[in-house]
Image 1 (cartoon, helix red, strand yellow):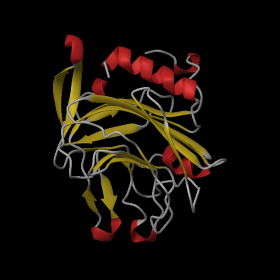
Image 2 (cartoon, one colour; image 1 turned 135 degrees about the vertical axis):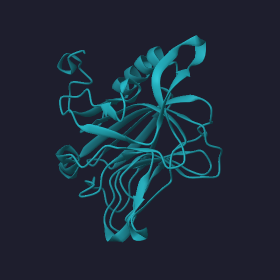
Image 3 (cartoon, one colour; image 1 turned 90 degrees about the vertical axis):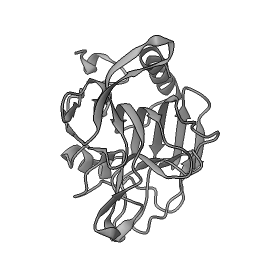
Image 4 (cartoon, helix red, strand yellow; image 1 turned 30 degrees about the horizontal axis):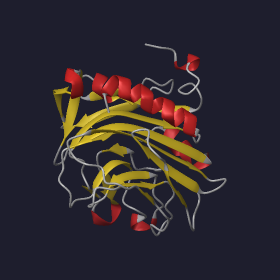
Length: 246
């Protein structure tokens, strides 16, 4: 395994690097120095053939009530002290439009009077929604991308935010960034006692009840406690394009 400390992007304030397509059994590994645990809840491991006849081995299908529990590690609790955050994901959606899907989240926006951890969702119209700061009422602006994220295609996204200017951005497949300025609360919230999930989120007002499941494949999830530069985000896409053909 490469040394992350020798990589100028991955070595600088990397929180986690879940190489989902390199997992085994019920777990996925965090290649970052934090070595967090990621457990799979009922997904199936499958071989997925990508464009140009490239194969990504041991990807997993998230459908119905499948998701990944990234736990309640102290790293996530530290998020409340961060002024910046960046998420990177590689995914493939099998769902048809009309349903909200979760890529990464902890709980539904401000349920049970608790502020929510940053979220990346696919809305019912197929837009990527990045919600970096949500207060205890669920209030807080989101960044919504256009055009839509079509199904049956691999996508690479980088979502970034900094409290200093309250600007959030989303870049899809190395294209033009969509940006927006957050209103109301500008703080990044830790998940507290709630785990961080890939593929679903908790509704604390309903039990809790998990909802907004993702239907498709997730190959990669990374997070940083800083806002990556536009150049760095472009480099990440170039790397993902070479590896995953997105």
